[in-house]
Amino acid sequence: MAILGLSAGFHDSAAAVVDDGRLVAAAQEERFSRTKHDPAMPAQATAWCLDAAGVGPDGLDAVVFYEKPFTSYERILSTHAVVGPKGFPQLSRAVRTWTKDKLWVAASVDRLLAATGRTGVPLAYAEHHVSHGAAAFYPSPFETAAVLTVDGVGEWATSSWGTGAGSSLTLQAELDFPNSLGLLYSTFTAYCGFAVNDGEYKLMGLAPYGEPRFVEALRDRVVQVHDDGSVRLDQRYFDYRAGRRMASPRLHELLGGPPRQADEELDQRHADVARSAQVLLEEALLAMVRHVHSQTGERRLCLGGGVALNCVANARILSEGPFESVWVQPAAGDAGSAAGAALWYHHAVRGAERVPSEPDGMSGAALGPAFTHDEVASWLLAAGVDHEVVPGTAERAEQVAEALDGGAVVGWFEGRMEFGPRALGHRSILADPRDASMVQRINSLVKGREGFRPFAPAVLADAAPDWFSVDGPSPYMLLTVPVRSAVPVDVAGTFAERLGAVRSDLPACTHVDGSARVQTVDRERSPAFYELVEAFGRRTGCPVLLNTSFNRADEPVVRSPADALRCAALAGLDLLVLERCLVRRPALEAVAAARSTF
Image 1 (cartoon, rainbow, N blue to C red):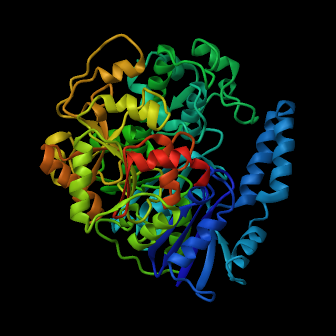
Image 2: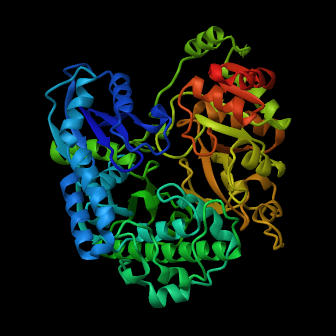
Image 3: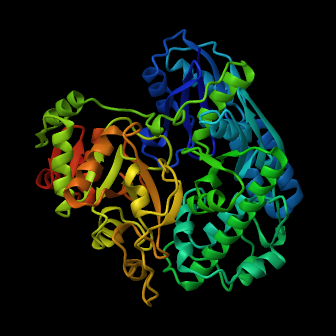
């Protein structure tokens, strides 16, 4: 029984196929269209998922959409009615957009399926937070667990909690719009000059440079955090209901000035705002999980929704919260809800038995497209790209480890593409974490991103406790933990200089506060990546690599060999690994010189 789950309409649209209860294929539309955070109905991702899952023309039992569009439309109309005349321009645009396209999901799905040769497939709708909750619980390794989902807004709910047990998922309570922990954090994201639904991780990375000097004023005037973790936001300080901007002039005044423009230089005040926002988020989430624990009595917790991608808060939930175990969906945002919707329908609606998988049901998040070595080699040959072929994966690991030890920045393209925002050793840019100069080189020259942002380390799972204060696995890069050898240094200067001043054995992966967003690499989930990190460890005594996503600024992560070659050439990488084909810098420079060809 194959079920197709879809998410679309706002950001990060995706498709996923569940076959007999197992998530077998999932991908975001942006990876195919090359439009970052593409919200369109995921036609290309759907076609690929169905083909990859081997679903024939008559093999699809149901399609499940991740939310109920008419309920979301009701919220938008009701909200604008409350806001009054100042919201009319946005209301007019919203009515045109929704009545033209977003309300007619059934027609869009019919067209999407017809393009794949499938018709007459029944369509069901899940609620937004049910999809988040299902994505968090059903792939988890737990038989029973508490479930907490937190995001901006879906229909009316902005957070929800409940329990999962076997095949059942029950959400027992929710917090409703306009009170939203996700929208609160997004408001500060926008205030600091970063894009909403894209730059929240930048705000998290900026926070350690600041002091929480606005927290008390925000608690007194703007945000009430109740004992159960629910928040009440004084709407006089916000403007997102009218749809014009996130913060109102009243909040600008409280924070000491107007919002930062995207091209404006960051200053200490922005860092202090970021730190204050992060503190408020962590406090509210800790209150939430303590309340959920007291109400459910469960020992295990599953987290979903976009806020669950805040790895600093996750670490505090794990270390300071009451739950013994915490599992976070690696595609916790709206993309992952495509998988959640399909899993919910299979288990909760159809009543199919659920058998938890070990280590979990996400297959290491390697659920996207792959290309065989023969396909890659044939394509490179036809394209006239000079390359070498290594005879096996062991030889590949040794050669790439040698290049990394020699200072190379490497594009690594191997196996199935990851589902979700993190690069986990399938579509990655890799470097030596012992070389502090890599921070500036990769940030400014390779990826074209802000110099204050840290890089994540990938470490062999069995060696992780020697290098990081981590207790247990962190395979999806969703926990921030202390680097054991870190000694934060308080210096003046730019944010990039302050990051470079942090001294540890892993300076390129150590943030300004001595922390790192760690990925533990095990042989079961990522055998090829494990082999590479292991080879680097044998060579250097350091079983750790700098791992960042294989893309340049404002581009989606690469999907195909052509994407990888183009990105590697334009980013100035030293070596590109495409399965067992190695493309070295001279060949990449030749491609860059003739980039219109690719």
